[in-house]
Amino acid sequence: MALVELIMPKMGESIVEATILSWLKKPGDRIELEESVLEVATDKVDTEIPSTHAGTLKEVLAKVGDIIQVGSPIAILDASAEEIKQAEPLPAAENGVHKNGSASQATPVVIPSNGSPVTHDFKSSTKFYSPLVKNIAKEENISIAELDAIAGTGAEGRVTKKDVLDFVQQRKGGIVIPPASMPKIASTPIVTSVPASISAGDEIIQMDRMRKMIAERMVESKRIAPHVTSFVEADVSNLVIWRNRVKNEFQKREGDALTFTPIFVEAVALAIRDYPMVNIQVDGDKIIRKRDINIGIAVALPSGNLIVPVIRNADQLNLSGLAKAVNDLVKRARNNKLKPDDLAGGTFTISNVGTFGNVMGTPIIMQPQVAIIAIGAIQKKPSVVETPYGDAIAIRHKCFLSHSYDHRVVDGALGGSVVRRVADYLEKFDISRTI
Image (cartoon, rainbow, N blue to C red; front, side):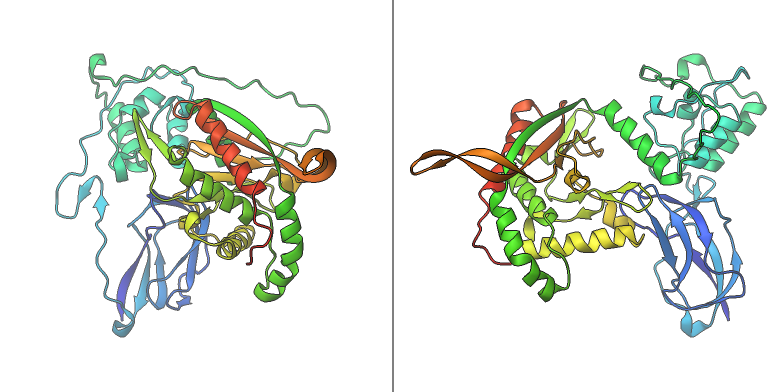
């Protein structure tokens, strides 16, 4: 038998660490190849980690709640020689030094602390800090300025648990740097929340991890991007009539429902093709125009939380393919079966608020995207229509489209034109098309 390390795998672009939620196996348990061993949480999704080898779980190297870097060992398996797969070794870095002995980052800079309590408004920092690092900073009374001055040894220069603990030890030793060497922190207004009033009989509900994450991201998006919203009312009578005619046939053939969402996705993808400067991201003073059109669809979970899986290259799928993609992502989202890659790479988002009976909404942009469209409920309304014999009043199916966009890079002309073009594609829907 041979001992094999189970490594925290890479789970998608930009994901560099994960928090261990639970171990599905305990030492002594037999594990088959690709069998799930533990459940972890990333900043995008909860997921299970499968074993890369078959064997017996000998030792668990990380506890529930630990934040583990991608590429770090998390368990040791006892496997026979024939069960061991040959794999390329992952580059590993320990204590800021790679296996080849080269330093990965400079020595952390230490700033003196006067020992007085400090506030921790992490939104005033431009750096990303994991929940564990934030907790240590609060417990050790480390200010945001001190935290920002630490040279991180993690992936992409992120500050790790070890970096913070090393900082604490050096600060206790009295290591000081001149004030002139301190990094310049952009002045950001600190917003303090008003304390809630609690009365007898009130119920206090602790936010779960996902709700905290949503709250932080929504506040951050409003801070980063000046939001503007444009509205258009679209006459969607043709697509309503068409869907009512083909939905039963589609259900029998595909074993799945045909909702309005894939039709909306198709219209948005076509509009983005026409106006590619809405399919962008901002990097400082640079604008990155994305080649792929990857559309996120907001999905409400049974817990009441929201998650946004992504349809990649949505403009390259026909309506049947979009319907299958939407149904698959929605089902897996509500059954907690999404993978991190399912949530990564979005370039534009759609939120179908009409499913809750809402006629319109002012959605918040998913960073680093610059735009999001909300689709309101489809309602029957009396409307003036043009006929060969003159204008007439008719009952039509209508809905509001709300387009929120980042006014730093998307002006009203572009933002308004995009949502108008989406409405045009919906209104001109070919009632004779097949699926």
